[in-house]
Image 1 (cartoon, rainbow, N blue to C red):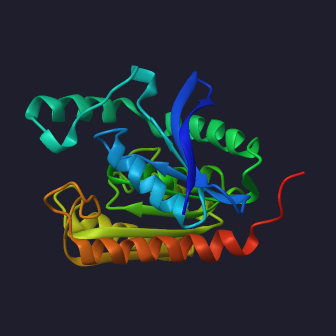
Image 2: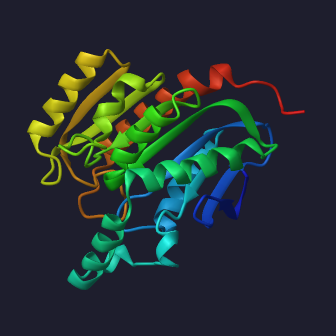
Length: 253
């Protein structure tokens, strides 16, 4: 399938956020998917994943979430301690409020695109962005209807803005996929999330895939686990297809 792709600029409360966007070259309009990056930041590996999402019949937008810091590009395949320190500081510079503001800009941008179907939007967040997809699902409940977190961190915390406190505001469906072994997500956190989901009654699924470690869906990492990674992709597309494609309206006038 041929794609139309390229960099776009999304106006936000802070400024202009560079983003990669991809969609099929024919057959639109397409439901939109917001792809929230992981801590190592914007890179070609993520653009390739966005292309895969687009090839499944979606308009995928991948924002450079570190744009407040300027242009930050790191070669995650040759990670060093110094590089890790840089992206850790970049990650810690973001807040749930920042991403909420940026998401408002992204939604407005998507609404202005003729090739994006009006109506519900989906999203996915990896690692650091598990907290963000949970947050925006609660902050934009009438728009974001299918949110997925892949080995997400910071979803349940003791802070006032902990994402799990917004679960009772979510109107869409949530999917949380965790690794079996993950130093960044203690088992107690997974259990606390399950308890919060049960308490609120939100429509959500929590899975832990056996034989996996944090980052297992990234093909460029040593922990990449192909079978489980593909199973996660299947779960992702099933979530979006049932929540977004069946309700996709006709082309915007």
